[in-house]
Length: 207
Image (tube, rainbow, N blue to C red):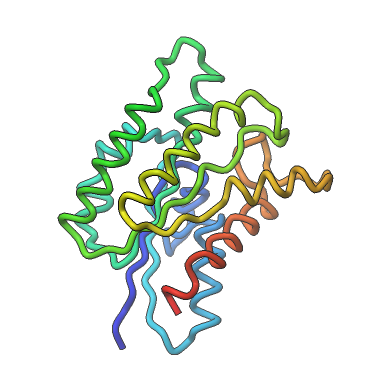
């Protein structure tokens, strides 16, 4: 049986408890994805890897890309990045913002390395939300970063996981049940929405 190595990389939303977990998967959406596939397809062999690091922006991802992405030679790589590129500048106005042009260029460079140095299929997750309010400043600023994810996905024939859209649709539904602990980091319901959206977008490739 050929094992499928699935790497999920990103910031704290991806990391979510992995350092306290003996499988290094955490207790967030990565754990839910893992548990879904190993129980739904018991005759398949999967290796899920979590390489989320809290606080990461795309510049941080670039600095560890060789070690945490290229060297692992995944069959699939799922990337979730962009929240801190917006949120950290809102919390720390003195912090230099990474311009959208630089964000796109760095993202393009990371995916170019994946394409040239591995055989991995690429999965790009939209950045989720900043505050559980569609009209919040963070969500307005995030829109351009979501658009960039779609642009680079088209360039690299990547699968897009519409996580931002899923959260916005939920917020627009009028349901007041919270999905985050602080407007960004997921509670169990938020992790479930992320995992369910990922599975819906990717399942046919992995089953």
